[in-house]
Length: 534
Image (cartoon, rainbow, N blue to C red):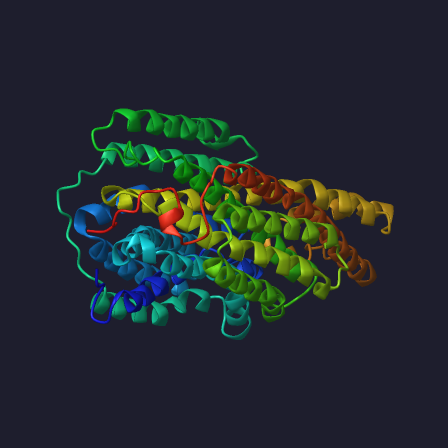
């Protein structure tokens, strides 16, 4: 089926422009965290929410927006989401407080949620199964490269024009995507009326929202009361109960968000579990790593982005190879997950307060190669042969799995990092306090512990000291405080990186169930080869 004025491949360019922005904004914020902490006078927890609220708002509606494309047509939903995304990007760039930025990122995530399922739905409609391998490889390469490119582009923008431009950059890219999309994408109309499962959407949204809120803010509220009688653990429990209720309800719903035939193919199920593990790991590893190279190793945003550049190049090269390879998809996926895990382990082992930054490059390259190998074969495995009436739902579920993994990765990594700082920084402070006169020790430990959770220490200012302390003591305190924070944060970050590695190993176990032939080979995939599209 022809996709527009100049054919499906040109239409694919519009889809890739939209998808690139969505994926870029899932990681571009991490490199700006130290700058945001100082500029917005925000806490670490607030800035983590700047990223997590985007992932959460991008995740929760995906099941619904996938079905919206089935009901109203993918072009209409994609254009609406793009306009919403661009408006929110402008709001983000103009924000002057953490609260305003978090709200804008939530709206931006909703726009991304409307766009993402439609991109994959269009690909399955624009290209027949026997020709779908190459465009899916391109789509997967865009996902992999954008995920890794985020910190690189973000570093350049933060250093030269300010962190606000990591959001304002979306405006010209999005404008091009909007023009191309309106001009080139076909306005498919649904053949029949698709009912929307409002109850299921509400259960899934509320459950995931409460779960993530409780996990990420548990340390902030000391795992106690949030407001009135409402506590952190009950909020997490209610979230889990609502997610369980959603699962039960979907079995009885007349028009469920998860159609009953969707998971008849076990390959689709395993691909989604693997996708969730990948989303968890890629989001979870960037947070501690970016703060470490800037706040501990002292790299400015440009230098930190250049440090990550080999990782982006490796991911792009591996994605190109994976898209053309005749190696079985499962082999590529497991190799990629293993490479990402190995690279993360190398980074954790090499990270020390005085590590030479270039020593980290081999680990980054291995991780980049791993990420690049996974996206294309995983997407092809999940979507080839999907029946036409399930395409929108399948696309929504597949993207939801990655985003659920990402938002849980952001929340749990942020939680572990904050918990780790609560233990590692005080311990490091006590170790370094022995170089001070005894009467300053207790107050030194208390002040550096408090500063580790605020913008002051991340900005390199160190803890505030009483005005009656002598200049010599103040100078020594600042020197020791910096050393103690660097040691404490490094130890906390190293411990935090263990979690993404464990999740990647679980992802490799799930990938063993993906039994397909080489990437893009629909005829021999073992799946139905009927035409997918309106």
